[in-house]
Image (cartoon, rainbow, N blue to C red):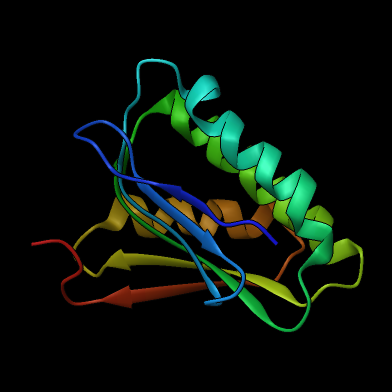
Length: 129
């Protein structure tokens, strides 16, 4: 299986999907000029590699901030992960946010309510510093 590794910038998150290392993380800020274009590589990876994922796999989202267009793309990432889940793969989503960030906590609950894939919200004292 291939690995997807996208380094972060001031406007885009770091993305590491590494099946061999069992690491699936999107972290940082997501305010790209063209969100659909940026997330297209993620969609392609999930479509091509997702059905081959075996064993328990957690997709961890540690986003400090994201804009409206990114939120739509993130939902599309979640939907593709859910499709992997529907194909009898043990995948889940972990939404990590800081305890002070009520907006991100609420957003996590909103996503959790519309998805059927296992979705865990983890609130930490400090994630971003």
